[in-house]
Length: 475
Image (cartoon, rainbow, N blue to C red; front, side, top):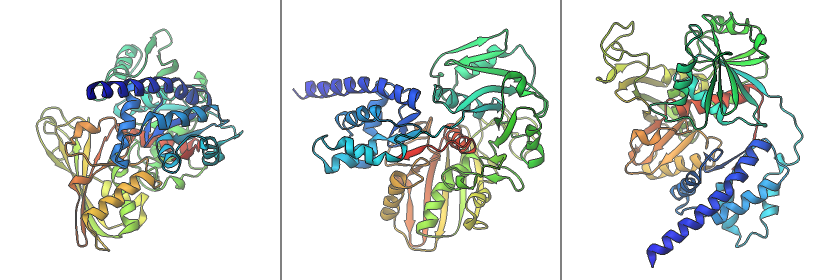
């Protein structure tokens, strides 16, 4: 019966998925190898997560990727002398099985594809990390860093700095454990009240208190040459952020907001190669800048951009008032959960810091709306070449799959996509292809983005670059 065949296929897939889980875990924990399927990371995944990842491939290849095509690859990779690599077994599997009928040539194929990461004896020293501020971005970064814990982890979260004083460790831990938008923490959290520390998935994190970046001696807690990630947004210029470098035990500072003055604003995937070993203060720009710049780059590369306007439909943030009250900014004092609030955004201008060829070509505004997370950028462009909708969408899809920006740009063909579907997306922007408008020299693109988690993933990539962690990527 058809119903029984569907169930049998599911059970067989589930059995292979369960067999893959220990291989995935050992590759990451012991060798520092991250495995993905079409950009979806598989570390700490469940068997159901693996089922979903294999089904996502249908969006790009027109068919669900069978476990029988990925499992043999994973078995061989787990036996190879490989380290510090990011491997998309989905893309590798599609390439191999397109030209082969059996697995006899699979070992040779993988050894050729993964050659740069084989027998690699290069040692990278782990880097201590301090999160200065523990708000929305700080807590998501903590989740991402702890998610990567293990013997091969090269970014080690050692401390979190907040204002106030001892006595709030339980509440701080609770905010990490539970999140109204992003759900429960994936793991275990304990607290050491006597030493004021949080233990998350075995990672021991000191909770420190300070009212100024230069008022802490990190070396007193065994922290040295730390990368400090400033999530407060209070200090955004070189003078203010340099205060972190006056604290004992620090070496570099990353700002999770647009930097002012001559601070480099980095959108990973676009201009991350501008980060030099001697740079000790860097900005990861804004969530909106990270969402739109990769898409604007590939449009500029193919069609040329004469000028354009970016309208951001942005979820409300802590900067706004919950109900009407005084606010130094225009309109932002009105109740965030009740109003659409027209405000400004610097994202359109900030694009030029990462993509100088667009300097002076873009304008922008923002509308804050009553949703807690996930935003949309509507990009209205006048192009230097003529374009039509189908070819533009085909190009955007191709770039989301095979360009150097495949980790930044996702592509959707869903007719039912709404904002909550993007919660937890690791991409900096998702092209809603069904909304694309293109005619003559004009194009309008709709780009979704998880302005919290997607941005945090971009921040983590910048952190890795600042720490000198350059993983081999194979897709």
